[in-house]
Length: 224
Length: 108
Image 1 (cartoon, each protein chain N blue to C red):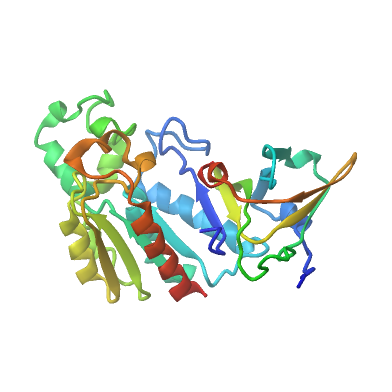
Image 2 (cartoon, helix red, strand yellow; image 1 turned 90 degrees about the vertical axis):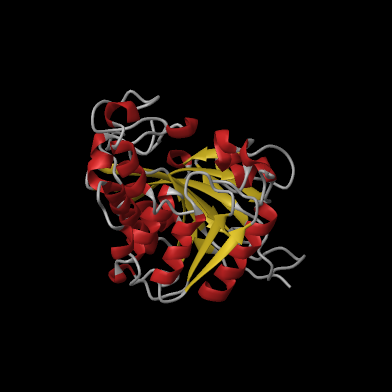
């Protein structure tokens, strides 16, 4: 994105994982709503930075970051100019409801204790009790859809974690949204963010040549 | 055509709620150079100074920054575009750089 002429700011959410370089919140305290607060703080900081146009800030988030970006963009006072979502995790409440059916058996791999569930798919993160409590029964689609600018959603056709149907429903929820299906892609568009899912589902693990032009075209159309 | 629209970013260091940590410069040849912000007195960016194609941003610098507020501190990296040259003023003198993107820089 920087090579295309845009400033890009990438950051660690507080408590998102044990390796987070941001401080002030533990993994036991992190929820999607604390991440919304983190993102709002980042937006506030960026708006003060020299060389940043505060009226042309676009959010790009993947998976849980996509959910957080979508919820944040709903705050009209932030004046977000664009929203790009990679396989947004709009299914988290459904996942928690599913795992709740298994009781303590649902806490596989993470050892996080009652009311939580653990490291799903070896992605290095689990859901804490606070996280589950925050999202249990939460209606994502009732809390998105007022963002009036165009939304670009990219989702892999072979996503094992978040079925593409969640993004298809999101497109129907927003007044102006476009869904681009990345044929064959799983929950991640290159080896860096696929993690342990990279070798599953038989697809190529690198879709950057498709995804990056989509993102740059969106930014050129909506921010310049 | 050269453009000498020098931008001083020294004031950015003092913005409330935002604290730059380090600056990483990727020169056109050689290894990346990292400066701790505490050792830098001033940086002057000279965007668009390349003769090659001043209207096509191509070079990148990476900043490590922290946002502070409500008891939390958020670590992030800022990737800034532009055909950037930079004069980094240190207590020991001025270091001039022409920054250039590398694959490593974009993945850092």
